[in-house]
Image 1 (cartoon, rainbow, N blue to C red):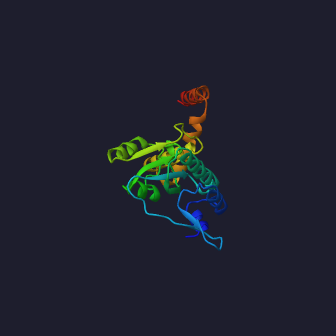
Image 2: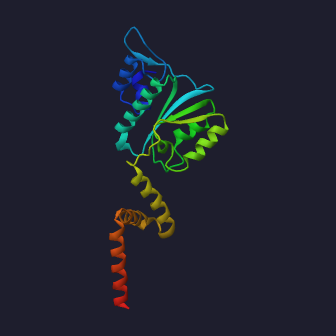
Image 3: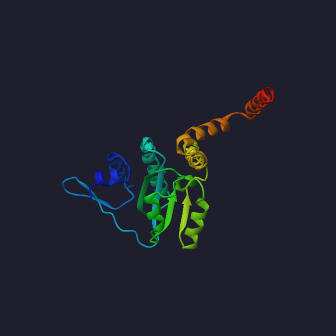
Length: 206
């Protein structure tokens, strides 16, 4: 396929993919035709193949997704890893039904999965995924062990909204979730004073 089509599938700007090709850093085989057109020769993963996985939480972070893929490509090149697949996905780290990740994990022909941060794979439970991979003779490589906080509030809101929906119903779930987050962000002293004020008012009314 044309490099521009491949780039769009990977959520990468076509000019970025062409720049990687010119620098010899494109993570898939490609060749230039006499006409100047660059064709990407994607191959099916075989045993022990290396896959890069990048993720952001929302569509307004697509530029971040492209930069994340670029950092993974550079890291792999610096560690002499031949990359056979690049998977870029938009979805919450709390969502266990991300289709691209599920297909990647189910493909036993991929022996190594590389992520920039552990929470790019999953916000919670990535250790279980890693253990399952190891049990199957595969491995997870985390480039940077630190945790990102950019979309942590977004993921927390999603969890709280889901729990509130079970307790109070869908209509008020989102409001209650945001209220809980605002409360959690307050300093301990402010929360204590607020709770004390509520108690005094309750005693005065009784």
